[in-house]
Length: 417
Image (cartoon, rainbow, N blue to C red; front, side, top):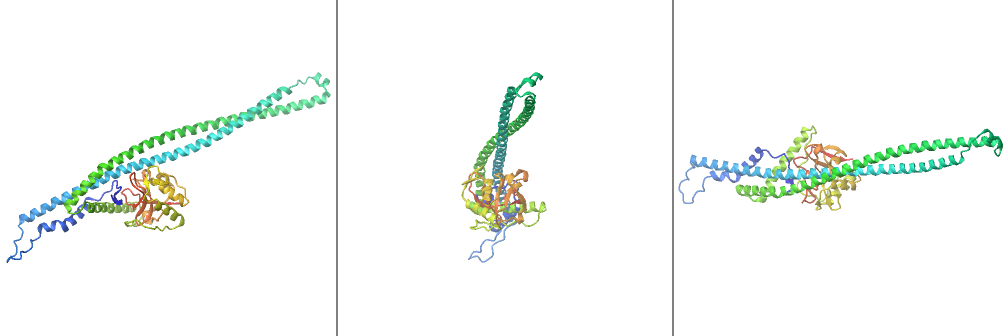
């Protein structure tokens, strides 16, 4: 299937658009022969009789029936395309939700490791304080001496020596008090830090379970998309074969024609969404083809674009971040890492980590996002100019250059800071 028809979602060309294009085909290739005068015979001496009213009416009815059949076949092709696009969008969203869950798990794992290290350090300090407390307690016990009046008189050194020993005992008592206070404080600190580490570990376990659940859902969504691809492609081929028969063309020509109609409808829809958002400006016109060289506006963007272009032909893998398998956000993350910018491997984060720019102001290296709104972004690509992006589209496809005009293209892109 051509790049222009890989995902559409909810926006389709209007019935009037499809009918108008069909009428043009019929007028040029079908309807005119039905009512045209027969070629004059070389031996005829008089012009042929004009068609009767009944013949004209019959021709009109035949053209109308043909028009209805063409319209129906076109609608079947669009509906099949939508089903496939919806399945792939659901798979992409599930894959990005897994990326987000994994990102949160990585963060909570680092938080737990930091909290656990602090708790262990505090526990080591507490253990040392306990040893010190025991030593002071032993010293106090060994040096404890009753200072009776008789002892002060008869003890070696006399009263002066007794007074000095008493002063030493007071100092030892102060040390003991300080050690006990320090040990108590260390116990409180170690206890609080261990509780904090436990809370961090509980969060890590919850995030781990969430990541496992997200992975299971993503796997199921990928399988559903693969099944949808089999059934809807068959429906598309049947519709194209019928169109080729009705329009006296080929299946390949009909495929390119129908995909062109869808691309034009999506491009018009993107311009309407941008206008509705008050952003103004015409969206870039789509220029078919893969450029051999993309020129970006600054060295960082140039490095990012060059890296992305170098991955053309690599296969898609959800959760993939290289070196030769990519999902959409894994490719843009790696490309911009080459450009010297750190963005997360998650479309939601990449939206938040970039500055908004209207489609009419996109530059090579900017990111383009897809979803109903910012909260439901399921896909990202790297803009390279001419209405095109470098894109890791879906399972079973390779990294390629294609149109940015999918039906759920958001009216603003993202410029990496």
